[in-house]
Length: 165
Image (cartoon, rainbow, N blue to C red; front, side):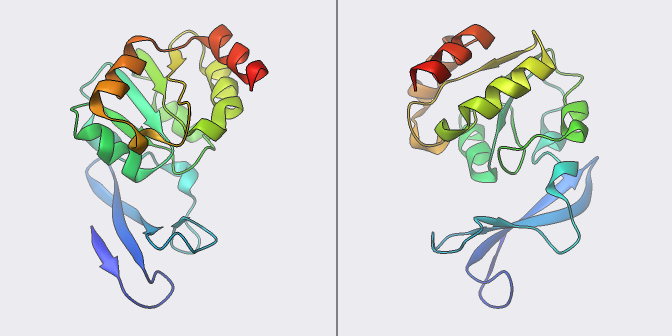
């Protein structure tokens, strides 16, 4: 990771994105909380082609999918296999990259429950979710994350939570 101090990516942490061991692109995350777009990619690059950290977790049977790079880094501290979709949109290409996992656990931000439900329907019985009461995975301790993982929700539970909110 690098920090950019000027230009188009100023005040952003620059994170490389690898695929099959090769550098493919990078994402730059705002750290000021004042920029319109939290994440930027180089011009002409689609974030929907890649999953951050997929390279490092292919040996696992289960994967946790988050929105952001820092969510993944937070979960990695606890030894959890996680990838980031670079936002709450999950492309067909990204879903295809998840095919070899027997369990796909969504840990999208609390404001993305409807998107989580839609992707769970698309993926089918391999998908479940942790329902975050607020914020994103970085707001929770290891003990809280592990408890939510043990009590993860299926499609019906996620639909019920959407109706409650």
